[in-house]
Length: 295
Image (cartoon, rainbow, N blue to C red; front, side, top):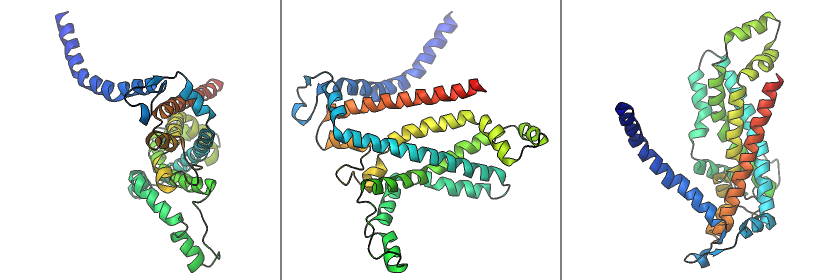
């Protein structure tokens, strides 16, 4: 009993610093943010806040800009997540199938992942700007068009550029995740499928995909969360222009908090976003479980 008690105390002492840091820098801010969402908390009420109940949540749902940014985030996620997963899986299959230059291709495809979001966003903004490099080549070099195209001056034009950046940045991460999963698939399954007369495509859908289903779900959930949390690319490329039409949920939240001082509104918006993400993750897990039960 003394040995167990001593071991328990040692474990508690070792865990205490980590638990303390987690509580102070994670749990407390979340709790504080939740409390803020029920108060009138802005630049004019920093010293004394007024309890207003669910008014901040009501203001979020009645805000027409919220509907715009929510649709933007949905579209961004629906386009970038499948594109990243499909392209990342194709690259992983390619690298897994070759015997030479694997390290070269891994590094080449992973470089965008470790590239700074700020730098990559500024490069994309420079390329697609009205006076940018792409328009220079189209107008002055190739002569395909007569005048510069305003790529970033429309809602879906700006969103498209941000989505292209998100896809380009995410292929390498998916490649690494799927490549690790492919290396765990038993070769005996492929040999058995070959004996049954299965071709490459049949092997992919009958052996590869079922074997990496867990990894696919993991990537899907993580990328969905990342899609809803897109911030840097939107902020650096369009900054919400024109008229907040290209804002995402996070850039709109940032604007309401630090430009208009509506901290209570932003707190409510953050918890609405968290609930949406939790619901989406639950649905994704449920769909995957249903497919496994069906098989």
